[in-house]
Image (cartoon, rainbow over all chains, first blue to last red; front, side, top):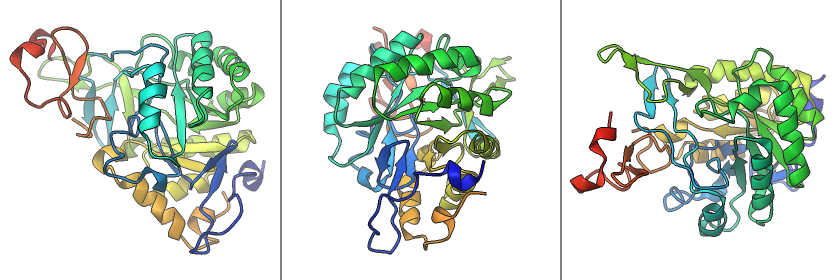
Length: 314
Length: 41
């Protein structure tokens, strides 16, 4: 399948911006302000950063994954440094869907494009959460977290078994008419097969990749660094893996792709677009530089037409 | 501590009455009794 067809429906929604480049992008039916979002779990609920950044400069942001009830995470240590990246095992600590809808969303400035991220331990719980967030006018779309690599139940088990993934996507699809993305795990043998399942079950797009399952060891203490033992590796270390998988998925499905994994610059973001992504998410880089995503979004606005951000995929 | 502004949730310290406090936002100084010291690494 040609790359241009893969990106179909992805280009600007009409009307060039002042600089001659229309930075607006439609991702899986979600009108974004530009092609640069922030990744779930790396930008909180937006409220933490809103005093310092104009979140309307972002294409959109994916909020921290939600569960129906508030949830505590893992005991410390939850994070560890790694070469060109980091490990984390937070385990979906979140305020719960009620506080998200009643307290977090209303606190965000008007015009910020918000995607909710849904997590659960069984398909019905994901679906109930998707239905709850769909009732709120500020939720532009939903991303299913089918790939968290460090919780005891749920998440990655859906993203690693094509039959479970099909059941999950189908169940959530029936629960919401909102644009639906599925965030895929890289911890599989054939990522394209998982993307095909999502497409077949009615997902509007796929986001990839989540963190790569990993561990680190403390030699002095002779035990794993993370309390959870296993965690997820993110950051520049995984970018070539992410690019490879985005490219493979772009060859396999016609639904749009949101590329994520180690993006730290506009050039990194363009690499994902060239591999067939319609939009990108900035994740771990937000920790090094909270202005990184806004900076990349600005670059997407000022890039000359016909190059880089508006180039055709490989 | 990865981010320092309350989004990575990496600096969580266990509270003595359950749940976690973020060292970056709720700390870094705590009343000693607020923290479950045995729960720290």
